Length: 397
Ligand code: PMP
Image (cartoon, rainbow, N blue to C red; front, top):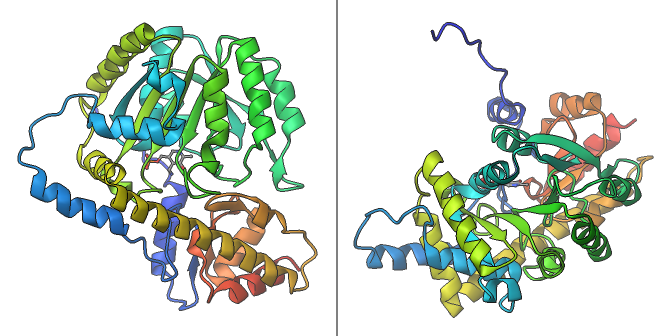
């Protein structure tokens, strides 16, 4: 039986890690994998999380099962963090939710919920979108198609083309949106564009499905969710997948939530039973540890402040690297406008260079990035900016 399957091609990003690790060039730069890194290339455990680990360890006296919802206090904390302390939808009990194994688990359970309710629906994702959206959503049995999004000419969004596509959507369509810090492009919707999307969703009946994996890594914790909150206030129903991998640095602890905003507390109660049932059928219940840590941080004012400060300084570091890289590029003889680098939000940017140029950056300069020319800006540091700009100048000649 097991002789029937062939070896799958290697994941391109994981392949890059191997190439990078085997590269002996002391100047090598890893702009591939999407994790936050500090100035020394390290993905440290956040200070507030380290303190929460100690508090939790002293407190925890059992490892018994928690049930499919996971850490209930954590789920409530994330509802407030994303939808706001004063969210009417939350206050009126219209938002169902559960802890999931990362944002990926949330996307998968959300997709399964939609499949249960609607059967034949199409999920519309931005062109391009995060590569993992496609298997996560299609393996739940939903069709996934794309809407125009990134404008390679400007490094921004083709909103007119996107809006024209949205005009065709109706109640059997799901619109997948990146809440902030779009992965892979860094090109985010403006507040006015969120308003236009909300208007269409309310009028045409399609359901927004927001994936928010980088809250706080763009313009700040509150600023980054302005669009999502506007949607929540202006459409009755929506789905939200959140992740604590980046903004709490909990990657391997697999910590996320799925939130489902419904029309009534009664609907939310029914949906709660379904998402829990879907979780039970997949993995039974989520790993609890990350949920306990985030709950501890969010509930303790001093720890919460410490976390917010550290998160802000991470976002500031990325912004200053964006500005630094642009300055170095502009100081060179490069005949391409890279000013979009400072307009884009979060950890990623699309450099908009060809596959061949990406290959040269890697082979001639040991600068590693995805074939699409997506770079993880947090992989840069002040030391390497000149080197990266020199390499760009050379490959763009
Ligand atoms: N959505 C997007 C757009 C992401 O970039 C990520 C992380 N790479 C996730 C969701 C979820 O990640 P995780 O499952 O690690 O929380």
